[in-house]
Every structure is written in C-alpha cells, then in structure tokens.
Length: 48
Image (cartoon, rainbow, N blue to C red; front, side, top):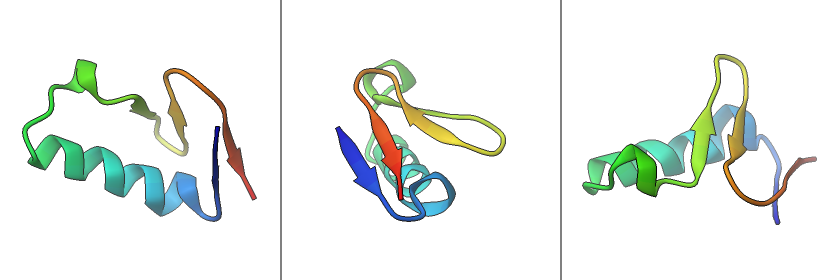
C-alpha cells in the first residue's frame, strides 16, 4: 500500500522516470502511467 499526497501528479511519475534513468526495464517498474493518473501494477495506491 502506498499513500501519497499529489502522487499522481508528481511522486509516482518521478519514481518511474528515476527508475528508467537508473536502467530498469519497464517490466521491472511496478508503476504504470496514464495520461492523467499513475498507479501501481500490484498493490494499492491511495491519493490523499
């Protein structure tokens, strides 16, 4: 479970792009990005 404040707009996007920059493959990153949202492939993301 991940609880964020502004996670869709910043936190999850930042973590996703940071993982890509560090050399992780898309399949290894447990975050998916949509046009106006971000979420987790496994688990629960609560936006406060």
